[in-house]
Length: 111
Image 1 (tube, rainbow, N blue to C red):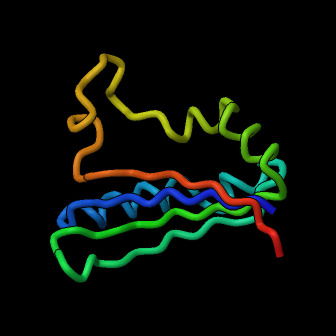
Image 2: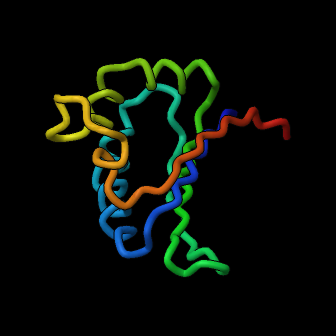
């Protein structure tokens, strides 16, 4: 099994909008045809030392690394992750309102 996490720090004021974007796009229906996809979870916590920051963790489980990489390179992935109205290059802050940072980590499951 292969797990990918995307840890996103958001401004708490914008967190619900970002959560809605993930839950609308990453539905069971939209992913069930993706070969090798097992499941998806979205987790949230308010950062204790700074309540103005909410941390979201997007976790996806895959049968293998190859399955996950095939999906990332697919048209389905590109369509799901395209930003509406960003045909012209704009500074990163303008593209992702409310997002402070995003860190992706990939894991091979050993047991």
